[in-house]
Length: 321
Image (cartoon, rainbow, N blue to C red):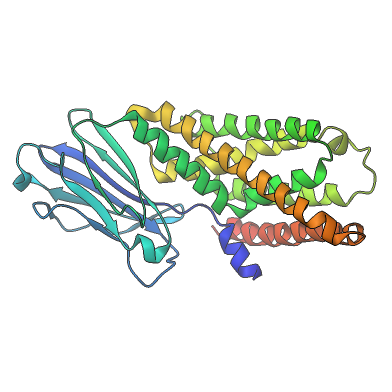
């Protein structure tokens, strides 16, 4: 079980199919899949029958993915090219994953679409729509926060730390402000960061929070002002979010919009998680009765054990890499 949870805490590993028109009906294709397969069924890109791929280059390792690039000749499609044609990916359902499709045409039109098991194909319309960017990147933000066990556990730890609604509001807001700042700065290329060190530091932030929760003296600075801890460590978590967004791919024509709604998706996913935890606790309080006090340390111990294992795992990865 612990190994399963460790796997879920690994960095977001997106599937990306990117096509850039470099000459009339000639496209440079970038195909990125996770290093760790989740199914024996392969992920395969699909394009119109009138397109012919050239031989692919040698695979490259980038972050959490394996990247292959090649040329795609679509001159047989006629003057419209890929507009009105269908692109897609096979194997999404079996691998329980989604994918980002990015298409850039020479005339400046850019398309982006999240492909899923329910919608594995996308037909390029005459004009790309901003509404699709908002929907797709909100969905990606929600997906990232809900598949990022480390981020969810940090939020869970904040819920254990804070005992009243007012302080919780300040604390979650501070975490949001913190990760929004670094998410924006990294995505826009203002700052860079060593991925391994940040992932290790995120694990340390959860372990530190677990240590704070074990302290019997609630008069400490982090108990009295938990928003300082949340905001500070939020800066680290924002870099983790940014890494996922950059690996997924961004539409340059709608970069600010994609960034904004990826952040919106993260916040929606975060709020949904808090509501689920609150509802779960409300349902358990009465049946637990006097057992509440005895069981209270258990989630803190779980937080500590998992974060300690991630610290060791990511620390070793960082030293080896």
